[in-house]
Every structure is written in C-alpha cells, then in structure tokens.
Image (spheres, rainbow, N blue to C red):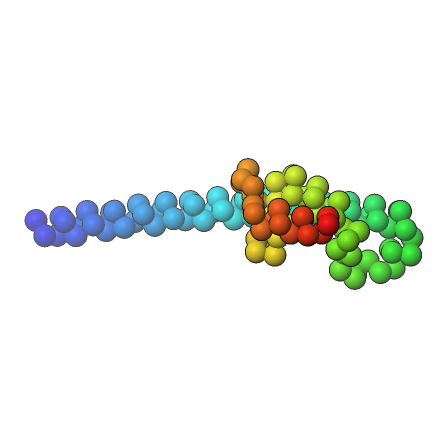
Length: 109
Ligand SMILES: [Zn+2]
C-alpha cells in the first residue's frame, strides 16, 4: 500500500516535471521568435539610417541617438514590444506599460 502511494506520488512529480519542460520549451520558442523579430527590425532600422545619412553608417556601432531614435522606439512599442529599461525588447503581451509610456513621453517632450 505504501509502495503504491510512493509510486503515485512519483508519477505526479513526473507529470509536473513534464509540464514544466513543456512550458520552458514554449517560453524558449517565444524568446527565439522575439529575438529574431528584434534582430530583423534592428537591421532594417540600421539600414534605413545608413541610407538616410551615409555618415551615420560609419558610426553604426554607436548606440542609437535617443532623440533621433524616438520614432523607431515609438514604432517598436506600437508593434508590441517594451522600450523601457525595465523590460526592453520583451513582448508587452498586448498590455500597455507605464514605464514605456513615461519613457516615450520624456523622449518626445
Ligand atoms: Zn515597458
């Protein structure tokens, strides 16, 4: 009887572990997709910036100027990603973020 209970408990633990792994794999997939999306966007933005101002192309490795980058950040935010320092690059999952909004407000003013 005791052995049967132990077996059952192990089965439950195993199921919980399986669920955890499945969840992690899902999370991993989401992050990969997000990462790819951000890379693509970054390349697009850098290419655009280079075509607008060839001198900038040489400074490509410098961080994007916050003032000039405002439109890009606002667009990134509108596409559903965080631009705040708290969650930068993460998906907003369809929710507004106060950090992002106050950050964008500051850049705009
Ligand atoms: Zn945010």
